[in-house]
Image (cartoon, rainbow, N blue to C red; front, side, top):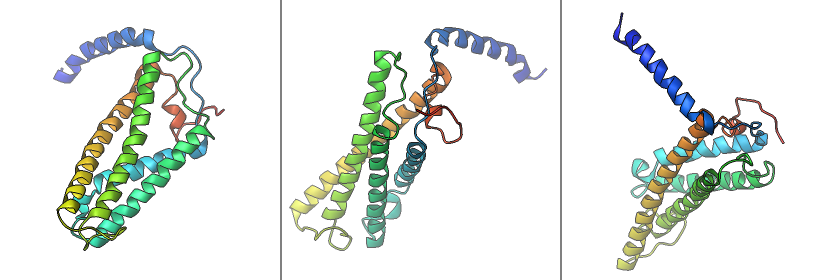
Amino acid sequence: MSTIEGMRPAISHRLAEARRRLAPLRHQGPEAPAHHWATKWVHWVAAALLVFAYVSNGDVTGALRDPSAMRFEVWVGIAVTVAYGALWLLVRSASKGSRLPAEAPWWERLLAGLVHKGIYLSIAAVILTGFAMAWLAPSDVTVIGPGFFGIQTTTRFALARDLHEFMAELLGWLFAAHFVGALWHRVVRHDGVLRSISVLQRVKTI
């Protein structure tokens, strides 16, 4: 008998024990209705754009050394702004708000609200500080402003860069929390919140 086969009974026992302990947290009501189809598609397109922007950042593209790379970063920032602006509007109009069940505990609503608002605010801060960097960058890579010179420009640019990097890191942690929350709804709560935003599964729409 292999080591893995010998461990299967213990693993099965631990999984069954985990399910028993988590059972009281399982949602007992109906599953959350699906978001509007436009909300779902814009959500995933916006997420893909943000991941692309996160991976293909200014350090990778050499935006501070190459005017065309800086211009590209600005256009990426505009695309992310449009996508998340559209998502914010769609969630509040076509989808009529959050999919958290009415019976969700207060702390779950609080955490969900903090993470979602934090993501939107962090994205806005990253975009604005990125545009500020493009505006304050040395004149040979400036693409949306006349540029400034002297120690004052350097100080302003450094401040914008530091804020940009800090908010980008914070955004990464918020997205990690968002991912953990998605797993919480799928694995523990079984309330349909994750399914409601999926484009691969069809659930009832309101």
